[in-house]
Length: 198
Image 1 (tube, helix red, strand yellow):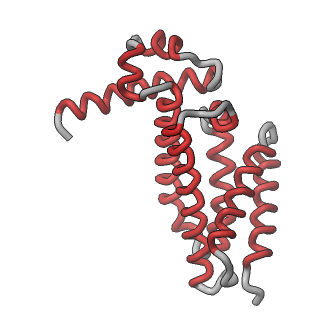
Image 2: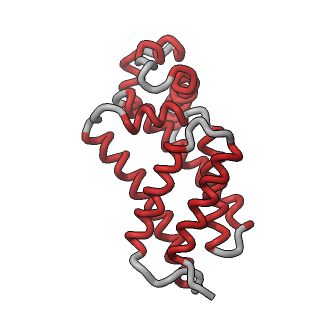
Image 3: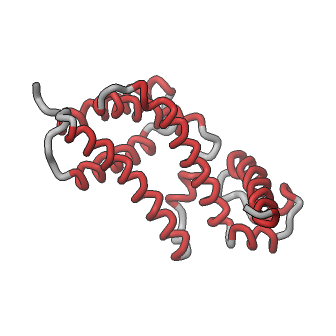
């Protein structure tokens, strides 16, 4: 990375961090580009140069969140010796991340809000595909090691992601222990359908 690229990346990070605090405090819809200009001391042109739009800036933050989530999962996945244990661990990891992340409320607004530009929709679609691929890999590993029934991995991965998205929405406002119990029961339901009976 040359000096100019490094400066560009540093500027993007500075803008993103200041914006993250605004989105966390005010929510996605209530945060305007003018708010971001005021908080960062940057110009609208500079913000648009780096992110193209408010949606692009927010997706940058979502990408960062996903990267942090993957790193924290990778650091603990060794604690789960089986795919069954990984599914329970995954559910707990999702609850704790979702309930503790400052962008959770803003992300709900963003993903359920108005229609977005094609490039933003494509990036959202890629995020969803990445999540489904994560599920696919986990289920395939369970099939290969004999824990799970040989079944349609693509369908199971989509069903698992749909369950996770629904749980995320339905557990809003719950106490952490209530949400953990709900996610734990969902894991039991999923596993009941795919586990090899011994």
